[in-house]
Image (cartoon, helix red, strand yellow):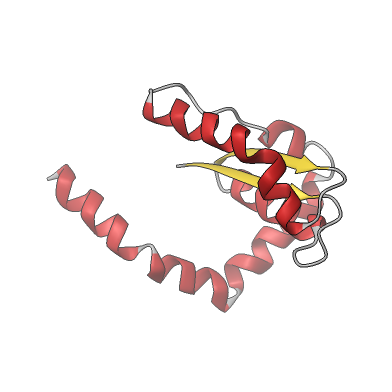
Length: 114
């Protein structure tokens, strides 16, 4: 499933490093990520400044256009570091919670495939 992440470069509520790490994790496990960082924006400013980009991105998904993917750029910086973070995340309780939270969707797909 493609993911769009917008981040404010001056966001004090959610730090840009955290969001970039999350984007890299999604990429490393095989996801497709469109990552947009609004350099001078705070938390709300990122939403306002990327709203039209988000709307176009969503419309393109409904129109069957392949999702753009920033994973090569995101992972190209320090891949060994991300492999360590991914291993730590998989071992954490959060990974297990996400697996449980996604269980209904996995179950639905499995039933539809029968």
